[in-house]
Image (cartoon, rainbow over all chains, first blue to last red; front, side, top):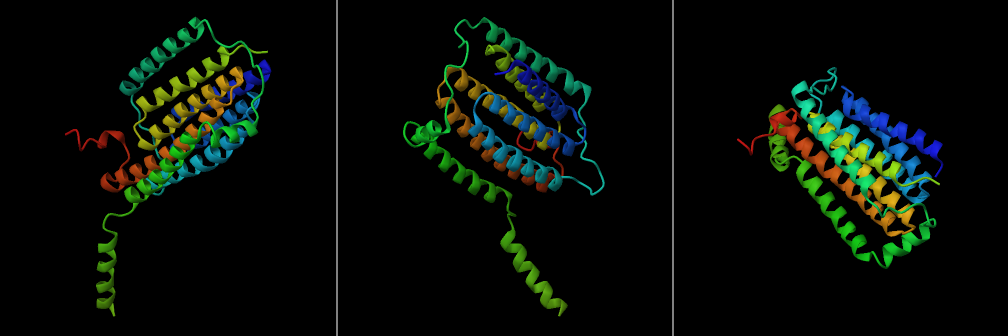
Length: 179
Length: 100
């Protein structure tokens, strides 16, 4: 991996991540998250994982960002009001402290661990990933498909209106009254 | 050839930024965004170790984790919409009905 290219991608990632947590307008935060996820795809290309980069662009930058934008738009209170992120100083300081402590512990352990791999031995091909999914990691694959089904059913059950049937029966008599 | 430590450090930083976002945001959608950041850091770690070890299982599980995140976003947004319908507000402070 080229250190200069890594530096550029890392700068993009960190800056956009800071904007994601920092920007007041939530729509801007979602768009900055799109930048973060796209730079992650570039980082995957640098790490010689082109298949993962493609999946990242398709699922994250395509799917998740669209869903998030829908979420922001559907849950705003009024038409013209910006979706503000009203965070206070009393909230921000402990959050910053917790993040700093976590970062300190993790980075210290990264540099203290003696047996980290030194460099890439060989490049993983997409062929290997596909074969592994259908042979060694078949259980993970099947669990994933069951999980997707469960998530789909769960989301439908949660998000539909609970009184859907009642509402329809209420609408019909009203229309009869009008005629 | 680059050592692995800077990449791991980058992913640790992303994760910490995500933690900060989860703890400081009030809007539930904002919290979900920060969780996405953290999951992204995890994926970077998986792919990095897969690359540096020359082993494909890391990438297989990165695919697994990406699909998992998408499912989580779908269910999370359904919950957010449910919260919005119940309270007509998506600030996390309002969602204490079970606590009180």
